[in-house]
Length: 168
Image (cartoon, rainbow, N blue to C red):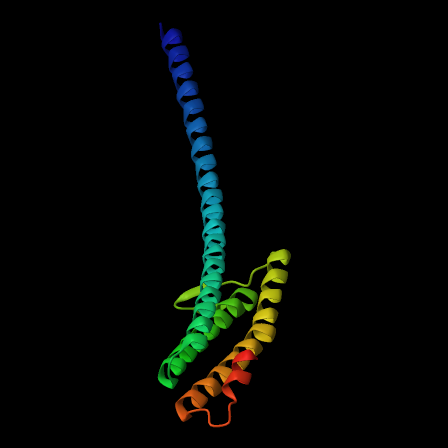
C-alpha cells in the first residue's frame, strides 16, 4: 500500500511540477509580449505625433493663404496690418513646427523627435525651402504692393499710379 501511495504522490508532484513550469513559462512569455506591445505602442504614439504635426503644417499653410487673401482685399491700413500680423504668426508657427520635426524640439508643450525617415526628411526640407524662399518673398511683395495701393487710395492717387500698381 505504501508503494501505491508513493507512486500516486510522485505522479501528483510531477504533474504539479510540470504545471508550475508551464505557468512560469507562460508568465515569462506574457511579460516579454507586454514589453513588445509597449514598445510598439510608443512607436505608434511617436508616429501619430508626426502625422498630427504634418496636418498642422498643412493647416498653417492654409491659414497663410487665407491671410494672403485678407491682405489683398483689405479695405484700410488697419485691416491690412491685422492680416499681416496673422500671416506672420502662421509663418512663425510653420517654421517652429517644421524645424522641430527636422531637428527635434518642443512646440506647444509637445516634444518632437527628429524625423528619421529619409523620404519624410526630404519632403520636409523641400517644404521649408519653398516656404522660406518663394512663398515668403512673394508674401512680402504682396504686402508692400497692397500697402502702396491702400496708401494711394487714402491719399487720393493724385498722380494716377493706382492703376499701374493694381496691374502689377
